[in-house]
Length: 224
Image 1 (cartoon, rainbow, N blue to C red):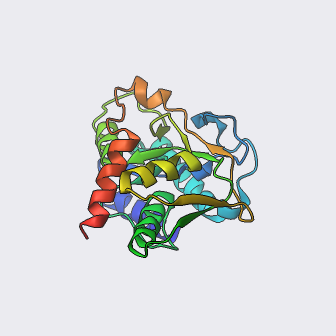
Image 2: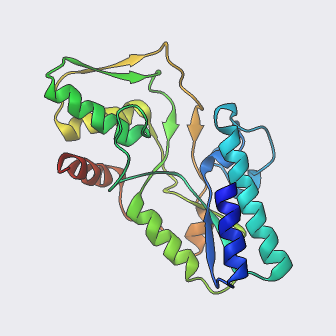
C-alpha cells in the first residue's frame, strides 16, 4: 500500500496524463460465481490466505477510482489473471505454478527420477495469460479515448486443471516418468476464471494459446 500510494501521490503532483493500476484476480471473493465478473468485487469474503494482498489491491483500485471521480484524473485499473512467460521467477519453491513446474520438472529430468510430484489433487482449475498478451492489453486500454470502465478484467476466458497443465508441461519437456499427486497437500480455491467479456467488447483478445506460451516459457528457461 505504501508503494502504490507513493506512486499515486507523485502521479497527481506531476500531473501524469494516464495511469494504469494493475490489480490481481485475488481481489474477488473466495466463492465468487465463475467466471468472475468485475461487479462481484466486495460482495463476499476473500480467500483468507491472500487476504492482506487482496485488500491492498482493492485499496489501490478504489484510490484510482476516487482520484478520477474527484479530480478528473485519467486513471484506470485492470485485473490480470495468472501471468507467465519470459523473465518469470523460476525458483523451485517460491515461484508461481507454471515456472515452478517447469523448473522442478527440469531438475527431475536431469536427475533421471522416475516420478514427479504435484501438490494437491490436480483438480483445481486456473486461467493463465502469456505475459506479452498482458502487455498488449495494457497498451490497448491506455490508448482508449473514452467510455473506459472503472475496472477491467484481463485474461483468456479459458482455464485448465492443474493435472492437465502438469501433463502438458510433461509432454512439452519430454519427461517419460509418472506424475503423482500429493493429496495430503491443500488444493486452494477450486476455480478462478475471469469473465473477459468487457475487454473483448473494447476490442482486445489474447493471441497466445497456452501450449504455444508454455513452449516459449520452457525454451526461455532452458536457454538460461
